[in-house]
Length: 165
Image (cartoon, rainbow, N blue to C red; front, side):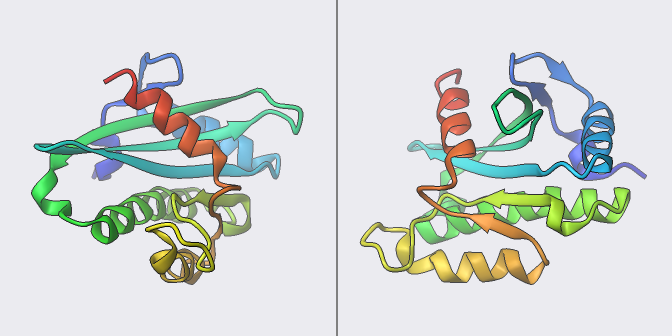
């Protein structure tokens, strides 16, 4: 039986379509070398739709270079009528991908790092009030996470992908 992630239209960073099975192979090999996998979701809201972009990123070295894979999904904006529901959905989508790799490839949670689009709970940003809640949600799955300003990977990728819409 196919997982929902297999039914998504996944793309490479260059925008080429790729089967999720190929991404699974790359991620599995990367994790077998004890290298981290980065996962994050960003979203963009219009009057009609909210577009979510979920990405899986692997780095080849600490000096840069790597690959990323993503899928975009448009949902009716009315389903995510406020910032809390939209950012919570971003975190849920990222956890879903991480859990898939953990359950199906026995990748250790310590090798997966989620990047959340929230600011510190001490800050004054709109997402500050849900920061602790979402970090707790992710850590409840045994995963580590980064928040702004350290959650740079998916904020940059999300912007780049949204500009392609």
